[in-house]
Length: 148
Image 1: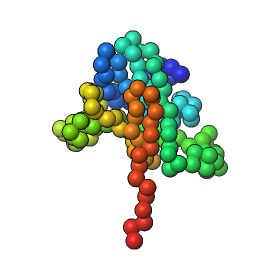
Image 2: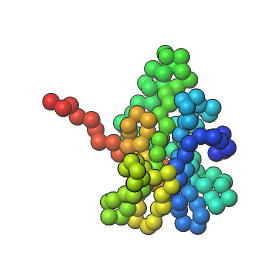
Image 3: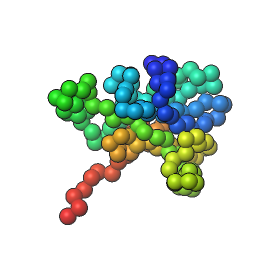
Image 4: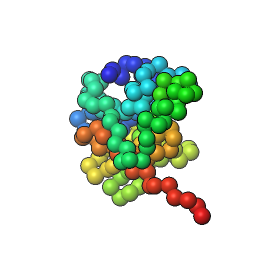
């Protein structure tokens, strides 16, 4: 996979040591130009030259059934379920995170320092913690409970 396939997409970045970075690309207008797989694995770790070190893998922890989601999407005439990651959130060692001062949203560019954790959420609201060394996004969404 090449990040060039995501040319023109919106993205957010987390700066890492040694000029490496995490980049999350997300669709610009709902019209995907990449495969269903690549859109669902749209976070990359890049070296200082822009070469891909890893493309994120998902560990759903039994919380999502991709086979059922893909089947439902195909019934609707789609090529599969598209649930891309939408942003990167850096949580500081003290549990806080820096936010856009205008609207409180995640920063388009943030910086990782030792002790930070990186999270992302997907288009359907699932929350993932990203292991920046291994390239695995582990679903940490609390199990939904009934309100009554």
